[in-house]
Image (tube, rainbow over all chains, first blue to last red; front, side, top):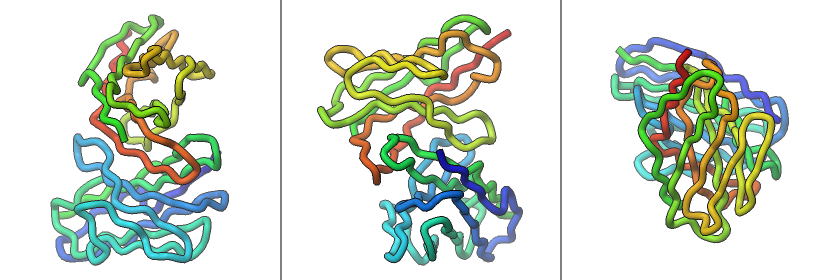
Length: 114
Length: 111
């Protein structure tokens, strides 16, 4: 199993500002995934973060808006840039268990943009 | 990833078995069926997965039809804490897989 810690757990931000969310895993993992969950909606994959290379973004998500860092095998950050109220969501970090077929999720970071 | 179809919501009485259906009629031979759940205000939690055979663990049982076009997740003795959104996902798996979540089924366990 993997234990994932996210910071902050929640924040309230002003329009036009940026926020960086941190994800720390208690073991080394190859890939980390960032998801977004808008109010009342299901999860949508933003990007896959690989250590030592650029993140791979899903359709509809771009690096300028959601820059990702992956400096080592246990840590990643997601920045939500130039925020608008539409960015109000829960942002979740996830990793896969090695060969287990499971994805482990953090508790999420609940972001409210005013 | 194969598309999955689940009922929007279901109710179950506490202590009874909860049977959650999922249709995945376009599933391919190398795709597994995964079940996750998300309790309110928490991150999703893995429940179980299977390829062809029925599977059971400490949380639930997974029954996959012989043609693999549908499956049922069974919570044998539902409790109030099992109230959650349950997601059925068909995916090829592997060590570097990522999941596409649908809308899931909101299971409400009633006292």
